[in-house]
Image 1 (tube, rainbow, N blue to C red):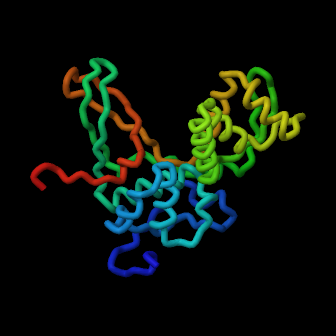
Image 2 (cartoon, rainbow, N blue to C red; image 1 turned 60 degrees about the horizontal axis):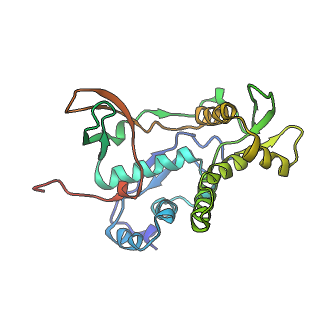
Length: 248
């Protein structure tokens, strides 16, 4: 019902994937709307790990399968919703790695560097040969459904007192489609028990290099010791909480 309201504007949100990995099911640009007060009231009672999926499905006008969104496109939508809801400036806490001084810094969300899809990237699945074992893999990009599966696995491990790091293995099992000479069971066991550390890093870099996405890094200048450094931009639940400036 909220999607049919007309007293706010829909805003275009170009996807870094340009819709290239969806076989026409998801366009290269989606229409998104700002966060309403009624949305905040509804989301307040929602578990943090369900917040992002519910937010996107509520704020996007287009009728698409949200589970199939690439992780990079999903993050882009979140950034756009935040920008049109509260403005492009986003302040967040950080700490200087040189002097340990804690302070707030800000970034312009409308001016982040974006890694767009190029025809040179090709199409999924890609072949990847691991550098030490020379095992041959077929790999696709992570989707929203994979992100949610990882959250579910992390929640299960926390509840049972198990190994939370197995949630990362769950992601690997999903986007590494096959390993030559292994059946599905053996592939999953190898990824969980036998993958070399350097080859894990190889897979992660390969996927990150292929993923169309915003670059969530910001250059920061420490006001205390004047040290310049780069820090990540946090996208937790607080990313969607507006705090008016003093005197506003």
